[in-house]
Length: 104
Length: 151
Image (cartoon, rainbow over all chains, first blue to last red; front, top):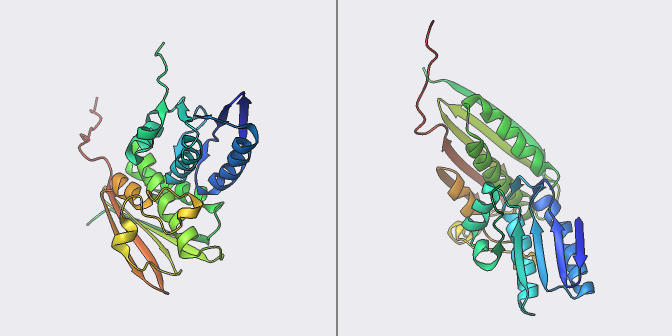
């Protein structure tokens, strides 16, 4: 998993495809980083991602459950139309902030 | 005479095969000349069904998952089956947010996604015998057929 920690903010750079196969490892790693660095904000960066199924929603919901207890937030950035559709359909869009990029 | 085509694949119930499964079905359906959106819909639905077979049907055992695809004119039929543990209560399993493994933070959206992205989803399951998910999608709905004009 590619990630970056800045103060209490964790950015997870999601892979090209987010499915059950790579979600499991991502969950474990993310939880360890969140725990170790007292993370309050988790940013999911979808820049490279063109496929995500409900396993990805599980990753987001699970991390939300952890950090909402300490008043944290979950964000999505660089989400393409398809990813937005998945986030909306699953209800994940209700619990997370989706960063709207300015159109050039 | 209907224009038909079929394919069948069987693979080990390893999570690494999830990507293979959805790409295989996606490439089979290209003969229907689908939109990018339609391909993405089918890939998501296949991924959900195969993931279910692997984590729920077989738990952690490695057995075979079978996918059968059939094309009839512009309709794609996809059937994902396993010979795993089966589903006790199909109606309950198909309810959005329901998951039998809450400790693994699964979202419980698998069947909801299949239903959202396909035209119809049918589940046949028998405990101890396995599960068969039958999905159907009409490709190119509402799209005007265009023909090239002869010069």
